[in-house]
Image (cartoon, rainbow, N blue to C red; front, side, top):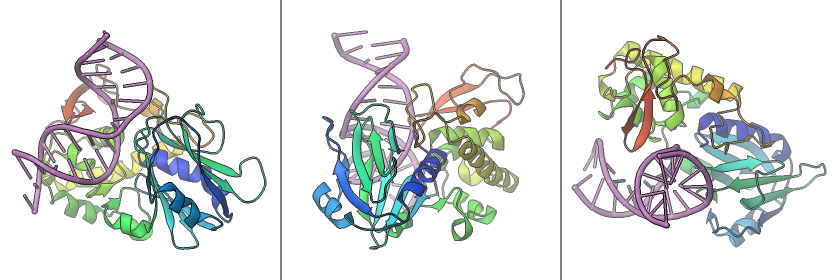
Length: 280
DNA sequence: ATTAATGTTCAGAA
DNA sequence: TTTCTGAACATTAA
């Protein structure tokens, strides 16, 4: 389930293969699955990008953005099971799209693979999409979320902080897995109303967000039990070995070594936390 | 053999 | 206005 660190890993994995090259052809892969959600429809998308130069490959929140010199950008939402690959898909059955690039070398193509097919690929104005999102959880420079930004955002809602962290209009890039991890490092209860957080808590939330996401990027994301998430070379991530609470119900909390991690459900999603280290 | 759970986003309802 | 629910899917565990 690609969240910010997994998408950042995808972007780094395909950047060298795409930037500075031209798109020779966009192809739909001959899989028997239901077609991906594309906007505009495939024929127009293929026609509009053919021959165009790729000038940047970057990440906005949980989306892969491929900027073309023409002003168009591919905006790819991997959702649950989408992957950007250079080689060796987990299976050929669920390959969905291929960008054939100019230039030689064995990796002159980039693929989008998606087992469940919930992914969405658009060719559009990327900035328009970015405007609909909150600040990037790990943005740089102008996109940086400062501690003051976090305070302002936290005033906007009374929902539990765990639920608010998943709202991409407040802060963009955090998903279900990293929300639990960040709150544990922050020593904040997932049940805490967001607008009741104290300034010291918000300061911890701010720094834990950066720390957890940067560490996860360093290990190229989390590959869970089902093994779906892979980097661009079809290799597993490594951050699952550093998880403190996610998917660790009944195991001892790594901080206090006394209390067991519990699982609760908030907004129909699993939340994992330690009652002792994250008091209400 | 059904059923539930998994995770992200959005439309539409409360 | 804000918050909640269900649907889009495929696969696996119960």
